[in-house]
Amino acid sequence: MYKITLSNAFLLESGETIEQLTIGFHVYGKLNPQRNNVIWVCHALTANSDVFEWWEGLFGKGKIFNPDEHFIICVNALGSCYGTTGPTTPGINRRPQLEKFPDVTTRDMARVHEELRQVLGIEKINTLIGSSMGGQQALEWSILKPEITENLVLIATNARHSAYGIAFNESQRLAIFTDPTFGNGKINGGHAGLITARSIAMLSYRSYDGYVETQTNPGNYTKTNFLASSYQYYQGQKLASRFDAYTYVTLSKAMDSHNVGRGRESIETALNSIKARTLVIGVGSDGLFPVKEQKFLAKNILNADYAEIESNFGHDGFLIEYDQLELLISDFLFNNFNKNRKTTFKQAITI
Image (cartoon, rainbow, N blue to C red; front, side, top):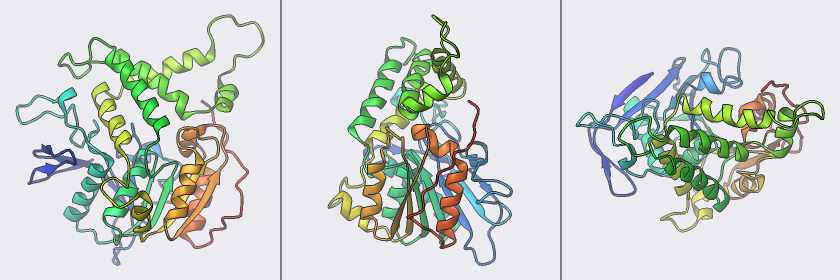
């Protein structure tokens, strides 16, 4: 990971400032002589800037985004705990701000991407890609700086976070706030609450069919020890072992703030300003970011196509259905996109 610290204070939408903002990011590959091979990735809620770690189906040797051919950049989101300044980052007094860290928005996050682009001296981005909260950042950045991106890939995301998504996020935060250790001045405060919050989140990330397919106990004799029960606790513990409650609260609030029409004429007008050739991908079973939200994006971005992947795994389909995504994205980037073709295959996985 590389890190840079901005020399000037960073002004947030809220009016508050962050002194000495540090930006953490990963880079892979090299700029070609034409400087036209930049792939820029915006990550989702609890991911990090090591895109080779969490999106290995699309990024890596022999993949569609190959470091032998591309200069790949992934930036840790503002407010995260993986390198960019966030609630657990030591401040000027060497103490983290924790629950007192200022509110950030997806627009603030997009401006952090722009700050880094300027520092790195990158004039053009061949492909900007993001899913979920990453897609929200990519949208905001494409509106703020429409001239820099040639191709835009938006997966399972939206122009404005829905009341349904906000309600899920608030329920997760309520679980964290009921943990008496949250706000105790320690970085691991709210640990038990975070486990519960992640368990709630999984219900929105997956689907009925996905749970039935992978978490149903075999046979007809079980009265206790359900696979679905242990799966929920496992997922909560898994996240809480690598994340913290303060970051979770900060980033979930940032998602709630997402609205590309805020302070602009309208959502539609903002989307109309995007100049990049755009592919919008929805996941058929996604209940958190339903496909009507992606169809709305494709309708209002002037040079956009819409495609849909089939998956039993809901919103998490963008992390699972690599084969379908690779086919759609490669066709789009190589000008072979056929929006009338339906992908019908599913990747075999073990959960």
